[in-house]
Structures are given as structure tokens and as C-alpha cells.
Length: 331
Image (cartoon, rainbow, N blue to C red):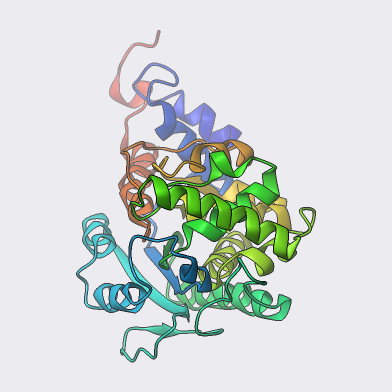
């Protein structure tokens, strides 16, 4: 990393003038153990799962939208497909907990269960199921790594998943639900009141141990959140950068960090979403987002938009002339 910093200072520009792009180049050097000079093969991993807490009326959309959107991903028609194509990335959709039977040649099936339990009435899943979902995320990364992918992004789909994410954030950080609960799919003020009550009830009913991230995940989380924890840990274990998308992906990142603190060095925060708890969550992680486009879609869309910035950081190191090679006078 230090060698890359010094090399960046020899390029034909004022020191540090490319800002976050230079920081990215330095981080990529640390991850790879070498000066970054190769464009990395990219994959967006979209984990999909349903949530029993939808029974409490906390979403503007019905649960059947989850399998419908999975079909949309597989047919290439969702926002993440469009943005990934623009970035030269491939999208892989994983059924890790959808409450439907989906058959498609491109689907990666790793179903742990048909949706989680209703966290307002009991735990989302067992500890064994949480570990299984994490391991599935690791296995998906392993498989894609074997196909030459070296840069991963976290995507998700699961109607109702901002509610468990807000509950997890409240427990893991102590931030009150008034700050962690957002509008998700676009609920009204009454829906917000109901959602906050559900989060408080879920925490009271399940009494998760805030010092045990796996306990918090299994009592309040989702199969897709657990799968993304595995994606993040698997990427770090393989020495690959992993781009964190929005609120749900970031709660997976916080969980991964609590389980394995060294994993943070491999994370790149893509954007600051409009979801209420996202900025304080990133602050607790110590990550600074690259973009702020007022997005709140999920799917990995914010992460896909950062792929070209990562490519730019690599190409600056690879192709930009030095003062000496260009015959430019230094300051």
C-alpha cells in the first residue's frame, strides 16, 4: 500500500488530487499484495429470501413480489441486470430462502427454508440454519472464484427485509429504532409507526445477545442477510474486494465484521442509501460511501455503479504517465 501511495505521487498530477480514486487504488494494492494493474472479473451475488414478519404489515408490497423479482433477475430485466451489464459484470441470483419453488437454469439454489419465522413472535431461524446460510454464501464465492471472478458485490431481494435489518442494527449498535427504522419500500407514516413497534417487539420477544453477532442474526435476521455475511467472509478469505451495497447488505457487513474484524479491510462501501439507518451503520463500520445518489432500491444496484470507479482506480495506476516519462516538471 505504501509503495502504491509513493507511485501515485510520481504520476502527472498534484499529490492526492484524484482523491477517493487514489484511496481505492491503495486499498486494492493492500488486498492484492501488489500494485493494481489488472481489471478484475466482476460478479454481483443477489441473495433472495422471504420474511415471516411481513405478516405484521410492515411492507408496501406483498411477499409474492420476492419470487416474482427473482424471475425478473433471472430473465435480465431488473435494475441490477441493467447496471451490471453497463459495468461489465455478471449477476448471479441465489435462492437461499424464497417462499416458493423456483426452477430456472440460471438460478443458484441454496434454499435453507421457505422464508424466516415472524420475528415479532419468535426467532427468525435456528443457529444451525444461520450457519448453513453463511456457509452457502461462502460456497457461492468459492465456486465463482474458481471461474475467475476476483471482485464481488453484495445484492439482495426480500420483501420486508429492512425490518429485520433495522432490528439487528438497533441491537448491534444500541441506536434507537427511531433512527434505524426507515420507509423501506415506501410505507406511509402509519406504516412507520407500525414498523417501529414491530422492531421493538421483535427485540423484546427474542432477547438477542448483543455481544454475539450470530445470535442477533439468527433471532432477528434473514436467510439472505446470513448468505451475504458468507459472501463477505468468503471474499475476504479469498483475498478479493467486496463492494457493499445498501442498508441490508451493510447490516450483513457489520455482522461479518463482528465475526471476523479483518474482513473490513476487503470491504468497499458503494453508496449512502436513503434508508434511515444506513449512514449511522456505515459510521459504526468506519466505512465512507463512494456515492450518494439518494437510492434505496437494493439488489446490488449501488454496488454495480461503483464497479467503473474501481476500474478507473486500476487504470490510473496502469496507464497514467509519470512526471519523468512524460517530461513534465514537478512542483
